[in-house]
Length: 113
Length: 116
Image 1 (cartoon, rainbow over the protein chains, first blue to last red):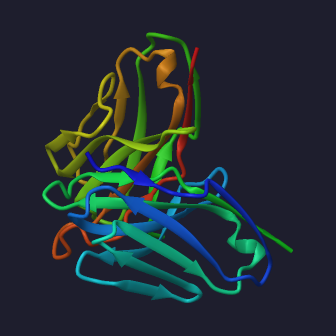
Image 2 (image 1 turned 180 degrees about the vertical axis):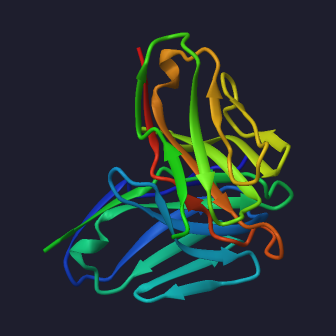
């Protein structure tokens, strides 16, 4: 069974700092991996989706990388802003069982002004 | 506006009283899914559907039912709610045609259910 872990559970940084969020998964046979953002009282918003054949994806100040062999993905946020404060979750679709998605528990990010 | 709409946003009920949480999407998505989110356990999939009349169990289907009679709607039914079903519920949808599962998942804003 696929397990997805995100460490740390919470992170606080000063505004302007570059930061990296981590996501690890136990089964490297994945179909794709998605990063989401969740704001309090809201649903999840998809940030980036990396297909199994890709190594990274970029959107604005966000860059997500994928290393299947080591079972790891990172989300890099450049020049962090207070508006980036939210919980960030990664989710993995497993090959052969691509219908289902397994989520990590998330990293709660606070960017201090 | 493209969106996934869940209703109600908040629901308090008593044990055993049947309830339905509605989910509707206006993006013509084939794939729809229900999740529950609990502290320390993250998001867990309850049921999913790949198209009309095609549904399947996720990781935690016990105590829930779903139906997919129309492409846009995917209601979640609790026939006899119990306190351990108190949770935050999310509906989500995505495209399948032409993309396989490589299409972003769109989420509703959630339904907070309390069963006393």
